[in-house]
Image (cartoon, rainbow, N blue to C red; front, side, top):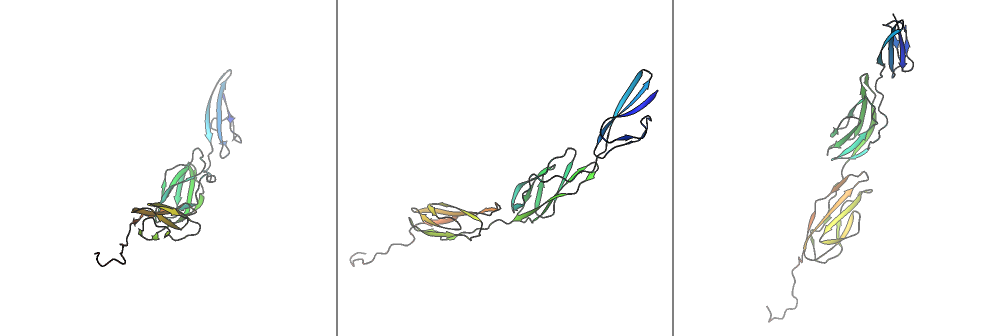
Length: 239
């Protein structure tokens, strides 16, 4: 009988001797080939096929499809992802501190604790042939705002123009919430018109341009007549 190797699929491959059953085949990196060995004896033939692959080391992951570069201390759930390539696994690392990388694969989330530091996030692709160079993104970890309220803890019933302020940080926004009265104005300084006798509260939420936010505890305010009345010119026969 005689035998013959043929290339069924795949580009660029060569057989040293296509009639030898144990010949040498050379392929192109990244290609997969189907080879067929056919034996014949006059009018009778039989064949079998084999698949030969020439894989390459995983390529660097493509550009990030999600990669926040400004994050906040004490916050999490930031999504970082690169396009998925079949057959690859992904290795993530961060050279800052105070972080947690959640998940595996081509998409993860990262949490940053209250003492986290800025750094670079790395992602590498890996296959059976090796590990790629890293795709990187620089991440700045921003501190949370630290507002505190300055203003009186007492107020007269139905009084107006009671001032409450917090430190003004340019670029930040401020949202005030008052119970027992009405907020007048906006920004880092407001006035409050208090209502009738009763409890009141003031709190403020400060937000940075990067979305870092902090809300103060409620500042309790007592709304009451705090100065006792004084009778002037009381007749001598009245005690």
